[in-house]
Image (cartoon, rainbow, N blue to C red; front, side, top):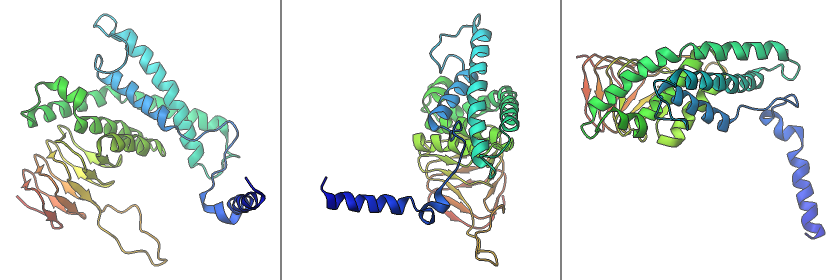
Length: 287
């Protein structure tokens, strides 16, 4: 590298190191603190899958005689891994870090991890209904095992259900990372804040979007390219984006929405409605 090039690079380094350049893009943290790890959270999701669907995921061969042992080991591994990632998320979200109370945050992280673990039995119960719904909805499915092990729609639902429980516990960042893992893997984007009832089926699913304040009832089936989109709100009096307002659709029970349909705004879709494909819906639909 000649002297001229070296000077140009040093100038770039100086500009990048200028506080005015990075002020809104910088996160300060303690030396021992790391940011939440996408790789570790993917490992956590895989552990959840192994616990929730024994025999389908994980390396160990599980039998009825050994399931309690394997479940105990996996739950302990999940607790340790998730506690660390939640702690990293709490630190990342704390504006007082790195001066925050490290011990208090760690205690909060382990408590949140334990609280999540207690939801696993109910998570399994509702995911069993989702597996049944996806199997019943698709004549091409040979059995529920194919749905659980192969179907991208079901994989996205699993990630969403895990993330939603963490979201309900007010765990920062982690829920969104988990649903974005499914988004990257399947092309299905479900915000962890959405509320979705039991027996939920996503057929194919690529390009499906379900926004943060969406409410979906029981026995709902949607196809690829369906979007439950939020209404664009005007800015507040200071010109800032308005947040925390319910702006996505409410979908009733036993609703079917076919491919490439967009529902937008806080509209209501009544029980039993079938919406054909390639529709733009911005008004409520009564039965």
